[in-house]
Amino acid sequence: MGRAFEFRKARKFKRWDKMSKAFTRLGKEIVMAVKEAGPNPETNSRLRTAINNAKGVNMPKDRVEAAIKRASSKEEKDYEEVVYEGYGPHGIAILVETATDNLNRTIANMRVYFSRAGGAVGKTGSLDFIFTRKGIFKIAAEGLDIEELELELIDAGAEDIYEHEGEIIVETAFTDFGAMQKALEEKELNVISAELQRVPNTRTELTDEQAEEIETLVEKIEEDDDVQAVYHNMA
Image 1 (cartoon, rainbow, N blue to C red):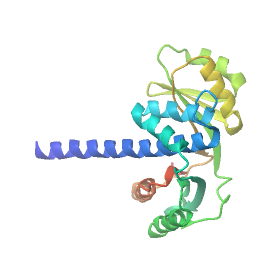
Image 2: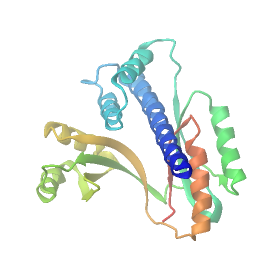
Image 3: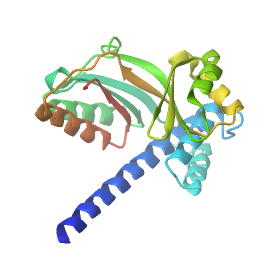
Image 4: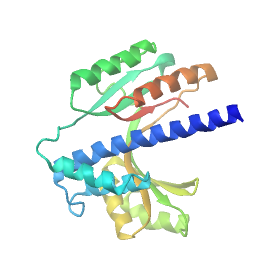
């Protein structure tokens, strides 16, 4: 029983830690959205999306409201969105999206993470040919006909629609993100999350040992409080 209990406890703590990180990331997104276009989600599409994404990960309503209230205060710090690009071991491209109130701290941390893993931070734009920015929408699949939905969403910019683990995934070009968001809202579908993500154009195969090195580096980067998202092109 001892080992089984410890295993379950470790998994529970890891799940709680991931949830806490998601809450922190979304809290920052809410703050940035409010500072950009005000605290009213009806007139602020970025805030509306952030609130909906917070619901999708079961972020408590009082934390969402607190983030909106905090962002409306003049005393709340401003976050700058910065993207860092580099290569990890074995030539794997890694792109890191951050929201920071201290650029010197963030870049210093990024350099440490990459260099200790045998990689290096590169120049901005150096990975543009590897990643394409896309809109990724996750919709509850229950009660929906995916073929019918695809026909309805093509005009809004749907490039690919498929089902995965009880959710329908809709992919759009970066420029069609707003149009798709509006179309889904008008159809009153149960949108679990709506995000702009970096999708690799090609992927690199690694051995299990090599893949573990990349996963360790990605996990280390994701632990940083300034980090919003991490992308790589490992298969």
